[in-house]
Length: 358
Image 1 (cartoon, rainbow, N blue to C red):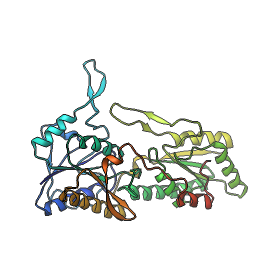
Image 2: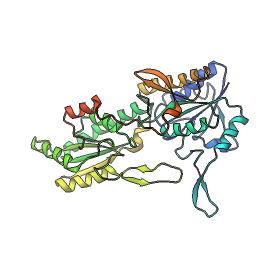
Image 3: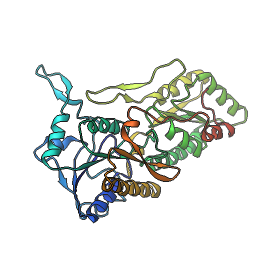
Image 4: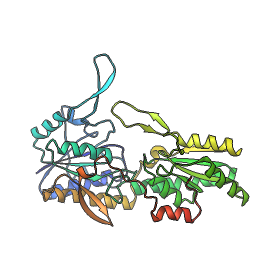
C-alpha cells in the first residue's frame, strides 16, 4: 500500500502530530508513505512527493505548524494562474493531480484539512481518488465533528490574551475590543469569551446592535465598573449590516477582519469612553499544540490509517461524544457547523450576565 498525506488551508496546532501518527501507523503495516508539500502545490512540480519515514516525523508532535507546509490558494479545481494579458485568474488542474497519483501508484490520500479541504476532497473522490479525511481547523466549524484539531489550543491562546488585556482595560478604565478568528462561526469567541469573563461576546450567529452593547456598558458604569471587555468574532456583523472584510485574492476565500476597530470606534463615539481594539490574528494558530490537541491529533492520524486498512475510503474521521467515528466526506461538503443558539454554552453566557449583542 502506498499512501500520500497532505495538509491544506490554514495551519493549526496538532497538524504535525496527525502526520506523525498516520506515518508511523502506516509504516508499522509495511506501507510506503509520501508527503505532498504546500497543500497540493508540489503535485505540479518535478518532485511531487517527499518520502515520510520514522526519522522524518521524529519529535514533531510538540511542534506547531506543519512539516509539509500548507496553502489556502491551492484548490486544484481553481488554481491561480497568470493569463496572457498579465491578469490573474484560475484554471482546473485536477486531471493533472489524478494523473500524478496514478503514475506514482498512490492507493489513498489522507487529507488533513478544514471545510475547504473537505470540499476539494469530495470533488476528487468523484474523480476516483481514495481519500480519508482528518478534521483540522481552529474554527471548529466542520459539520458532524464535535471538536477539530487545533481548536483547543486556539481557545487557550485567546483566553490567555483576553485575560492579559483585561488588566490593562481595568487599569485605564477603557473599552477594549478583542477580535478573534473563526470565519463564519463563533466558537472561538464564545468559548474564550466565557472562559475569560468577558462582558460582551459578539458572534456571527447572533447579529448585534450597538444599543444592546451600550446598555451593558452603562449598567457596568452604574456599578462602578468603568471598563468593559468585548470579544468579537471576525465574522460578527451588526443587525442588517454587512461583514467587514479586507478583500479577496484570486483563488482564495474572502479575508475577514476589521470588525474590532469598527466596534471600538462606534462605541467610543456613542459612550464618550476611550476605546482600543486588538486583533489576535495568527497568534491563535501558531505555537505548540495543547495536550488535548496532541492527543486527538494522534488519534485522528492513526484512525485514518485503520480506515485505509479496512478499505473504508472516502470517509472523514470525526470525534462524536469523545468516540472516533467515520462519516462520508461527501455528506459534509459545503456544510458548516455553527454555534447552536439553544446550546447550554450560549445559555451559560446569558445566565452569568454576558451580553451577546441581541
